[in-house]
Length: 96
Image 1 (tube, rainbow, N blue to C red):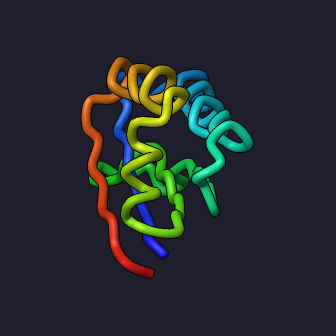
Image 2 (cartoon, rainbow, N blue to C red; image 1 turned 120 degrees about the vertical axis):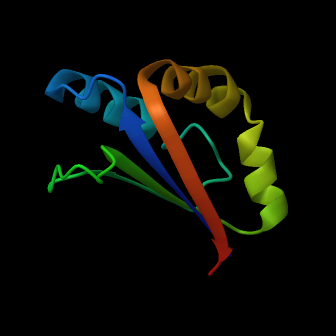
């Protein structure tokens, strides 16, 4: 299994923008069959070093994660939204 974690720092982290972005990430549920687990968290600490949202997803293999990256909904809907609203995006992928 591969775990894929992504942290998002919004350019304008208002409550409305955070909620809209959380909803966009959650919208992948049921649309992308490759996802074995999807969890979206909103930061509650709000420190200077905090990112605004975290996405935790799990996939059966590295090949399946790579298929997710180019899935039409992920690549055509989610990635463009995230690039438009984020000032920073970081990720880590590991065998779990």
